[in-house]
Length: 310
Image 1 (cartoon, rainbow, N blue to C red):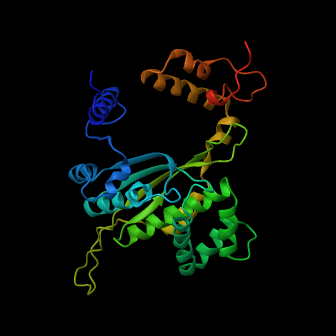
Image 2 (cartoon, rainbow, N blue to C red):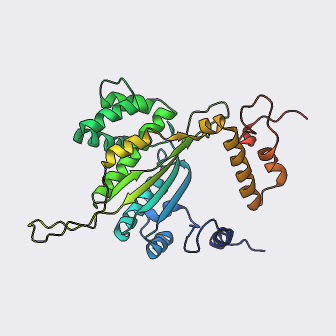
Image 3 (cartoon, rainbow, N blue to C red):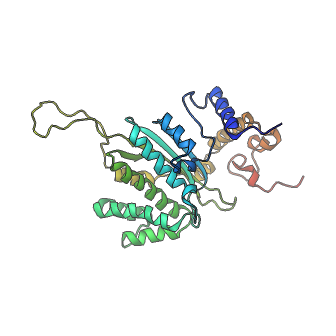
């Protein structure tokens, strides 16, 4: 039998997600690489333009947002720029962007990373409060922002992830600000995808809320006695992003410290993977009894463990 085309397989998966109640029937999943929207004649871009604006966009990438030496058409960060451009041209409501990407030293194009850091530098020049807070966040005790950025960039693990998250959120804020939109960094998370003996976070999952311009119309001459309608951001978005970046949760640490939470995660993961058709034997470690000497129930990633000899 001929193979089912990728778009048909994608439609089957999308339908099953809708029927299971995980997404709405107005949602769409993309059958092609998201990076393909960088091309102006892309079928995916045409589909997005037809269906936009969206209330929630989720981008779950296995790799770097801008791999070293990647071509323009294979860079996720360029696709994100195209998506945000489309959303801000069509949306009049708040919307959420979830981005999960690899953020570790050696996997991110240095020139692109430097430009993300520039977004932090520009903000620091405009606000002494932000500059002081950024130094304390990136490297407490540093003499200046450049030293703090340099130390964070050279420290793989959480320091590297911190400067990446701050720079990425600030980059989005500067672009949105050009259209009078604002951006808030919501509760976000990080975790490790390194070998089991290295808990340093390498993946970051950022939740960003885009807020439209205020609807209020200011009367410069005071002819009207009406106050402008409220709306728009009410706090300093730069300081809000900085404060939220400083409290990004390390999921591995949270789960290691909470046996009940770890057990619930394992059970939920087992259920979802079983629904997806995974073999029962492969999933059994997720619901196995606690391992002697282990502080939490069976490891969240049982495939990374050395199995005992039978």
